[in-house]
Length: 147
Image (cartoon, rainbow, N blue to C red; front, side):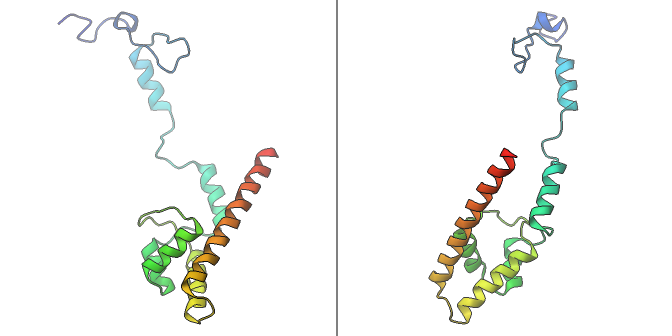
C-alpha cells in the first residue's frame, strides 16, 4: 500500500475530480464534503412550497385515505375508485387529504345512496371533474409562469 492509497497526498495527486465542475477540475475532498454539508437537505420541505400548498388547499392534510373514507361513511374500495377517477395519485396511507376531500367524498357517495346517480355514473362525474380541474390547473400554471 502506498501513501497515496492510504489517502495522503494532494487532491491532484489522488486524482479527485469534481464531477459538478464544468472543467472537471481537481478538488480537495474536504472541500466537496463541506459543500455537501452546506447544501440544503433534500428531505426538508421547501418553505415556499409549503406556503403555496396551504394557500391552495386551504386546510391542513389531516386524513389518510382510510381515515377519509371512514369519516365519509364509505368503503375504502369505493373511495379509491372515486379518487382514481379524479386522477389522484396512489398515496398509500399518507396523511394527504383534507376536510374538503372528506366532504366531497361524502357528497358524491350520497348521490349514489340517494339513487340520483348509479355508481358508474358517479365515477364518470368524478372523472370529468378531475379532468376539468387538471386542465384549469394547467392553464393557471401557464398564466403564473407567463406573469
